[in-house]
Length: 185
Image 1 (tube, one colour):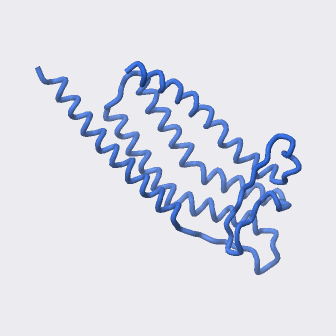
Image 2 (cartoon, rainbow, N blue to C red; image 1 turned 60 degrees about the vertical axis):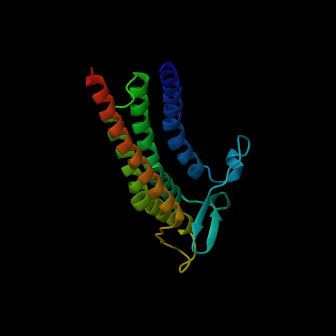
Image 3 (cartoon, rainbow, N blue to C red; image 1 turned 90 degrees about the vertical axis):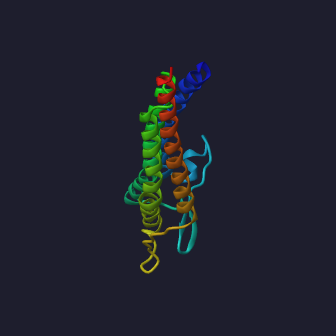
């Protein structure tokens, strides 16, 4: 039990760091998309899939509207991840207290599974749509795109959501067994 509590404290620190880093990174990659502005610090590439092929945003001159749309696409795309991190923080706080197989934890896992579905069906397509608009807005008429897609990444997310929901069901059964064990003399 002590080991679970120790790892939970470490995970809480990591998750808090990620809650700060992810939104900051999402803003930086769209605000400083040209390689020259960040070249002294690090190099990165962000590719957006459009009907004409993959576009590296580092090769584009983005206007403020495109940067805003790009930041919106990144925030929409990372919203389920950030919400998932908040749920994981609550789980690890419970683990740190020694509450492992509880109904509250099982509900958190179930909610996390439903956020996978939300991500697959709403946020991924919406985020990809905003990314395509942001990268093709300066194109000449006839080469600007709005595209909504559903593909393998969405199916992978749905599969992960199903797994997490099944884990939540197992947690509920484990909690019932634990309650029965406490009542047995």
